[in-house]
Image 1 (cartoon, rainbow, N blue to C red):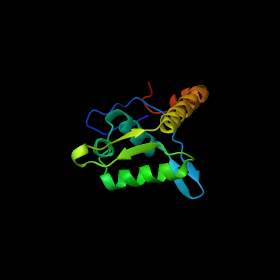
Image 2 (cartoon, rainbow, N blue to C red):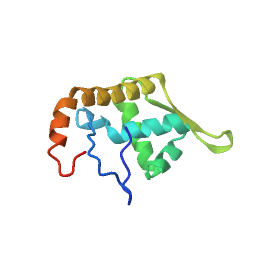
Image 3 (spheres, one colour):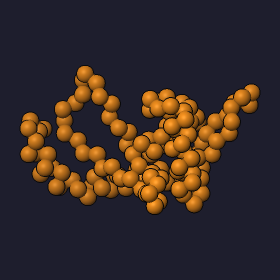
Image 4 (cartoon, rainbow, N blue to C red):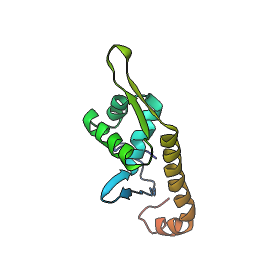
Length: 128
């Protein structure tokens, strides 16, 4: 689930976003930003384009990919250098599965908390 961008026409409709962060020791190996990065890599085939879509430097995106690849038993992203051969990046089978499971975790959480969220939302000012 991609983070909502703020703009002049931001919806005032109340929304709930479950945000999970997975740690291996003290190292964050998967969270909302890293999951979004994986999604953009899957869509674009490029770490640099994924970084641009998130207004992130390539170096920062690469460090996130490195942390994820080191944090899981198998790498989540496979990449090749650019140059004349035109590099790129793809999610590995494990990367695709991890992203899918993370998104499922978010969806299942929303479904499980729907009743409580509805009650809480009604307490908000001008709730719809």
